[in-house]
Amino acid sequence: MPSPLLEVKDLVKHFYVKGDLPLMSKTVHALDGLDFVLDPNGSIGVVGESGSGKTTLAKCIMSFYRPKRGDVLVHGQSVYRRHGRRELLSNVQIVFQDPGGSLNPRFSAERSLTEPLIHLSRTPRRLRAASARALFELVGIRPSDIRKLPHQFSGGQQQRIAIARAIAPQPSILILDEPTSALD
Image 1 (tube, one colour):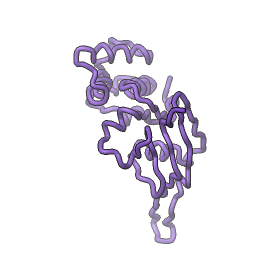
Image 2 (cartoon, helix red, strand yellow):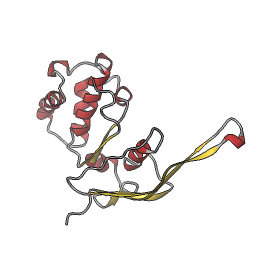
Image 3 (tube, helix red, strand yellow):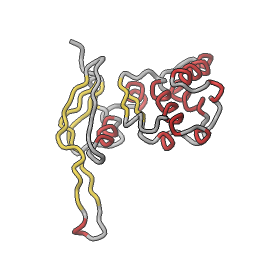
Image 4 (spheres, one colour):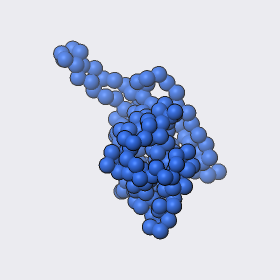
């Protein structure tokens, strides 16, 4: 039996929220002892109301947040003990809820797609432009628009660019944080 792609073990993440007065301050329990395993070729859906911890979970998996307790293992290695972000990002990519906020406003769509090809997949220079155009076509955007800046696209197109960027390095794990909310 193959080893799990992703293991979340007893994950606990709390946030201290400071109020206007000391008595109004509180601790929010975003994640309390969460456990699950994602096997190769599997998928997991996390469902919950707004504020229930879905995005916090995604950010813990990406090691943007450190938990109070517990661990996240990708291919058997802790995301908190890895020696490089490149290895983690080569294996795990995320598509955020807000595409406009996740795309660099100064990067053309082409550059947004080629950055992961350069830094995470080491795609040869001669293949990068063709790969970016193929990704554009895959998500339903005209390759002729590839030199446009993010603000020149609709919110739905921005989300499709963010999806293309996430799949560019061919990660083994793809985290989708409400990826269809902005699609047209």
